[in-house]
Length: 196
Ligand code: GRF
Image (tube, rainbow, N blue to C red):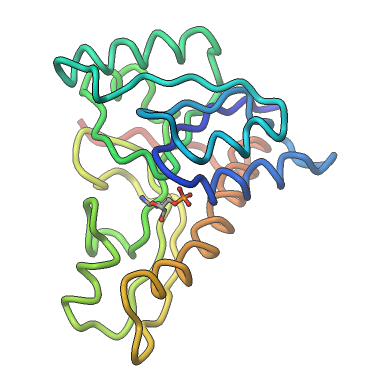
């Protein structure tokens, strides 16, 4: 059974989907802990499943490295096989990435390498393109630049605003994430190491 730590910042709808999938008896992975950089609303999903949570508050951090070291110490307590960044809105320091990569993956609401960064949905709309997408990647030292594990296109519809488009992308992100975690757990997907 693959053990997974999930890191979030927000509502945790992708976390919820992963928890629901992991509750199925034939799913080959289970979430052992959920962490966040603040008191995230999404903790409610972990609590519902009786899964422990931890917070490493960004607001109290004096440096990215210090914050990352504290986060790394928390992860070491649980020692998961895989770390899933699911809406964690923070860049991880290089040391932490080096420690975990390629066993650390991220979901992104755009078809990478198109529209990396914190505003992938907004940037796709601003670019006036007809389609964007969702991606699951291995975390590397860059911003959403690691090896792509899965991705799928999502059309942009007339009248879409950022919220409407993001809400249509998220179900695709969830499906891709669950599938990637399942394939990692069964050995069908071997995580590629990012280029140094
Ligand atoms: C997802 O689209 C994620 O990729 C992005 O923020 C969203 C997280 O939403 N960075 P939620 O917290 O899972 O609802």
